[in-house]
Image 1 (tube, rainbow, N blue to C red):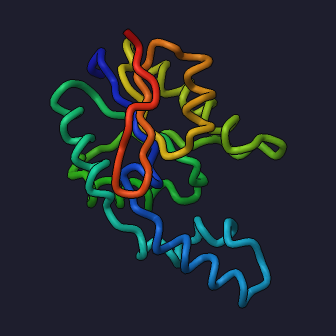
Image 2 (image 1 turned 90 degrees about the horizontal axis):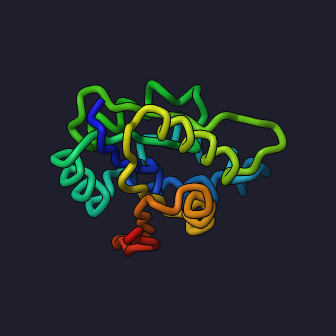
Length: 163
């Protein structure tokens, strides 16, 4: 693997899940369950779309080094997630690390575990891109020398830059 790596979260950074979130919320009302339970169902994956700004940044970073994807999606969606990444990014063999399902762990803790696994693959992690400010804050505490980028709606902003 290339010594310089760029890590990207999947949902909200590379994949626009806004339609899926809306559909999950509406469907949850009729089923009487949490919309977050439905968010990662195979039935709603067809609503995923590439997120233009995230894919553009990803393609630029591919010219500079290697890319690793991390996701909060469950391992049971690995095949489908890899297919979406191939389709939306053009990367033939994307490297995907899923955040482990740990009973008491919240998403931030799970994503940090996935992030740590990604850092073990690379000699130098240059950037991390996520759509959750709290996850970026947690990463900044453990990895202060990594440049962090916050993705929101159709834009991206620098969250923290190491100088």
